[in-house]
Amino acid sequence: MLRDNVHRNFGGQCKKGDVAPYVLVTGSKDRVRSFAAHWDTAREVANHYEYLVCTGTYSGFPISACSTGIGGMSVSIAIEELAQLGANTFFRVGVTSPLVDELEYGETVIAKGAVRWDGTSLDYVRPEYPAQCHFELIMAAVSAAEHLRYPYKVGVIGDLSSLGPEREDGFRGFLGRKTREMSRALYDVGVIDGTGESATMLVQSSIYGFRAGVANINSVDKANHRWDAKMDERVILLGLETMRILAAWDKEKEASIRKFTTPEII
Amino acid sequence: MKDRPEYIHEAMGGQIQPGQIADYVLVPGSEKRVEQFTTMWDDARKIAHHYEFLVYSGTLAGIPITACSTGIGGRSTGIAIDEMAALGGKTFIRVGVTGGLQPGFKAGDLIIATGAVRMDKTSEHYVFIEYPAVADVEVTCALIAAAEKLGFPYHVGITATASSFYAGEGVTCFGGYRHSKMDHIESDLKAANVYDWDTETATIYTLCSLYGLRAGRVNTIVDDPVTGQYNPVGEPNAMQVSLEAIKILAGWDAEKKKRGLKLMLPAFPEREEIAP
Image (cartoon, rainbow over all chains, first blue to last red; front, side, top):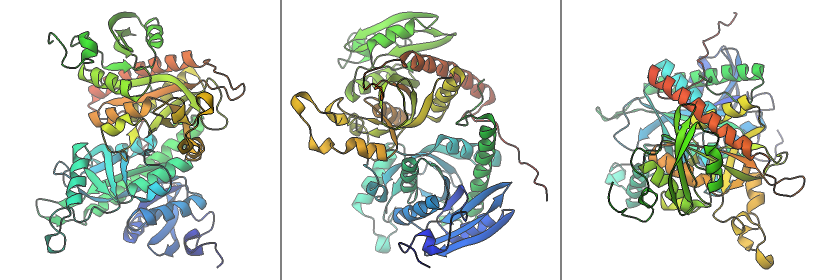
């Protein structure tokens, strides 16, 4: 199929209408399949490099899920393509390893914004520009976490092109001096969690006038010194419930001709 | 209270005693606006007047409230926030005037800022530049709810905070002086969906985010795109919206305390039964 670059429309596999306005974004293809398994209807619309895109309906509204792979460069391509195909609301859910001990195992971090150490977003706009989450998505994610009874914190997260090995656990115990300094710098300003896919998506969304949000679940079981894949189920349910809540609020908003969803005035 | 402040600006030149600053603090730029605010409260008393910082405390619909002018620019704004925070201020709303950057904006439109481009420079002394200057969700929502309730035209988006009023916003200065570095600043910001220029918000948002305090901002567009003239028609609207937002926030804060909530949220939508 003809296309103007290798990644356009995910390798030419999608056309307008194949992607819903609401898109769940996550790192791995497995998680995209897990999202789709919960929907009322689902079809695969593209499978290109690290991008698996599924579209369907969930709780009565159209939804897509897209894997981004790891890192800002692949995320930026995914958002560009999804935007062209009709997406306008992005919620990234994923797992994370905490930068500090204060974050409990299984705890959800709902982002207000992200530190732009992704690198990629610097290609888009000057570094002073905020990588921020849309307030409606922050509220929807908090509402979802509350109702699913997941413990959560709301705060600024880190976003890193690579942190290198985070503790003395690199090959032959490698730990870079710069990594230690960067971790410390984040800790000093209250950043407790680091991801590699948030800031790029947030900056693109603000520039293009889209809504975006991020929540990550700490799946490192420190007590048992292991990575626990069971937390993936939490990721899936949190993502689905957040989008369901947001879509329901959007429906009410349209009916009331208000521009934004806010709490009721008491 | 110590006999003498440790620093010249501490407690606004040592004029403020503990307990004199309310939780809700309005931070306009000008001293005049502080005086205008006090006429809209139930009662007001002057607490301090030190350099460009004029501070009044009083009550609004029974809610304890403070207004503190920041003067112009990041450095003085940083001092105002640091001193007000040290004295007990917890929620900050900036009210001011702004130059619109997007087509379709009119003089008098309100701009509620969700985040700020950190060209203030001051905030860089607090934290590395890639840290996001973001507004508090509840304060943003309260400002929106207030603008809706009062029926004033408003927009919600990102502001850019400059570190100088003329050169910093790419304006031609005295004798035609221009700094070529700034030639593309305005077009770049417009392309990046930035809504307006101001000179304080990024400092306020960065500091409040670092300190775990709440902040929001409502400015009115005063650069009339039709006439090209300064037109402060929206100033009273921005002031009214900020006061209404404080009333709304006080209501939410009381409700949160009563129900043990962490964040005030819209009503939870129950799952609809989907017909098979």
